[in-house]
Amino acid sequence: MRYIADHDFHIHSTVSLCCHDGNQTPEAILDYAEKNRFKKICLTNHFWDERVKSEAEWCDEHNFEAVSSVLPLPSSENVEFLFGCETDMDFNNVIGVSKERLDVFDFVIVATTHLHLSGNTVKKQILTPEEAAFYWLDKFESLLSKDLPFKKIGIAHLTTGHILKGRTDEVLQLLSDSSLYDLFKECSYKGAGIELNVKTMNMTQQQKEIFLRPYFIAKECGCKFYLGSDSHKASALDCAKENFEDVITQLDLTEEYKFKI
Ligand SMILES: [Zn+2]
Ligand SMILES: [Zn+2]
Image 1 (cartoon, rainbow, N blue to C red):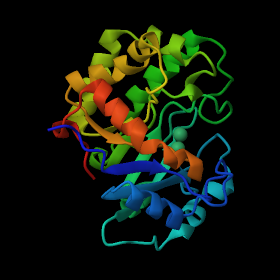
Image 2 (image 1 turned 60 degrees about the vertical axis):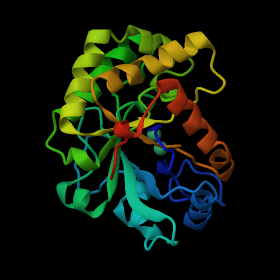
Image 3 (image 1 turned 45 degrees about the vertical axis):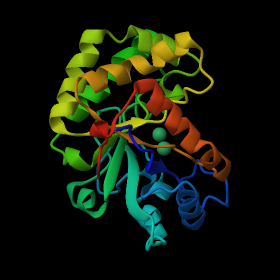
């Protein structure tokens, strides 16, 4: 049975500083879910837990008080609205959520690929695809080695443009099949979800091959996938479902590959 696009587990609201759309409220997001007949959605604003010590500087606006200010989330008969967050790993690979707070969230997305945040996720600005490829693998491996409740952990946008501006395709091509197999086998064993939000609709065949290769390997390793639009504005919600359907088709995903919270 074809994988059903019935959820979106990566959505930001106005609480995230990078969301500049005042209309991106939990109510508007619930409305988006209703229109697309989603059964479950998850709000995942940026979060760095103030209880976690880091040598990097994280903005106070993304502390626990801020992310929890959305509670209680609006609900409806058809849609379950989950409370989550998107956290980071600093340049020492410290993860931005404490054990106590892990219990509070329904779902925690970890971004291992926010490699554009020099001074935070990486010490110095990354300039070459080789450096970016090193950190791509290093952060992913480090995340999987941690003591975490992986059944409620998602790994965000592994092929995002944040990896290296305008050169993500070059970085992805540097990741060897064997490194990817090793990581995704471990990921499958631990049970973390792999996020799908790659926008395949306007890609050339060559781009699709480059951007989908990690996901095909993940699929072969038995990983489970969730859909996450990573929408920061109301207009991005409009085409989210169409993007989801396209990537499901490209990867030929069935319901067996669905990550469930
Ligand atoms: Zn992100
Ligand atoms: Zn995000």
